[in-house]
Length: 135
Image (tube, rainbow, N blue to C red; front, side, top):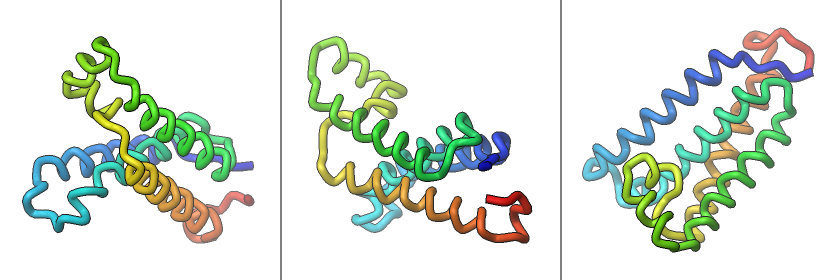
């Protein structure tokens, strides 16, 4: 049975959030490719870590699927441009959560971020020095 340490995952989620926000502050210092994709990739990783913290006994594959579905739905919601949601996006937190406009490339960035989280989790689960539970 999977069992994640909620405190560890919540801390990793917070660190990832801070890294993601810092990419907005220090954009001019990042290469163009990273500037375009690192924020969305870290956002998706944060979503993976958040769901991992909430569903501590769910399988890694289940967390990956939930995270991908969540990120993709949020991206598709960006196609909806009603006045009220546009105003909500103008608020900093609303814009960070809901995004501003649909981009196919964001779906790729989300997939990469979640895949990295899943692969790292699976790697650590198989390492007997890091985790002594049986999986």
